[in-house]
Image 1 (spheres, rainbow, N blue to C red):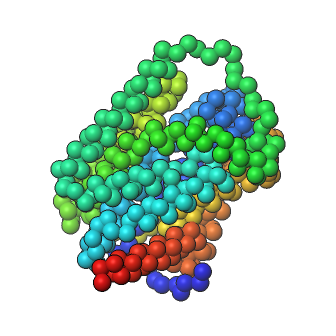
Image 2: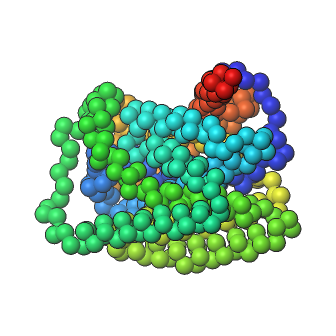
Length: 400
């Protein structure tokens, strides 16, 4: 894996790299609370082992600020990436979706490995399926794509409404949820946790199935925003500035206050509505704000230079942050989560988030000084190139 270092092309979008970096760190800000819960994902779902006293309010605010926004942003960014791949294929005179199903298959393999080895809440498997569907939708007319967005969004809202209605009709739970016993997160080996994920795969993969319509809609919205020039300067595309302003107005002026109010006061139903309906709209505001900052050709400053390498190595950093957090928190590693209590979980979680962020920032920068791609990006690209070449040779042989 010693590809020669090549300089970054001048046409590379600073906003895209920073946006990907923000999305990756945002997913960590959401998921880090799962790792520091002694019952892991099960404890997070059951809301056990939370902070108490003043720390409880801090925990609620921090979780709500991250909840759903960066899942939405990452999903939109995947849609943009898919549209960029389509543009590149067309410039090369290649058919679309062409070899993209190979890319989707490789992403699904990456997600499967990430799920079993490191985290129950992997999104890559879902993005692989979504990407495969949307790749074919992007080959259709713009009108049909808009219809697909409307249908997918409507199905998603109906699903969320049914879930919220079921929660409202259900009797309140009796007592508090018991801790896991035995607890594979705190007491099990690495392989015990792999087996636990395999045994509970239907439960742990339920969110991926639930958000498939939302993901399809957000992928297509990301592609549409790219076509509309959301990343372009206003001098080149006069409508781009107006588009970004509208997205920020709706995302920050309307959706964000509503998300905070419903998420903080609405209980489980409010959490679901916020995460799956309102938060993706906030994500559009985040995208527009960052795109607006770099739209005039501004080069990344200190923060941007920290985020860009993470964004360029988004796949590697996403898997790395899960692996590192698991190694620190779970029993097969340092076992940090089992040593936390309601008075220490919040400051420790925040400190761990900062430490993992610093590790990713330094690691990605050092890596990219020597290699043009992250390790998983290199493996993914190399595997796709070989599979695609083999597929082309087979098609040529069949046609001859």
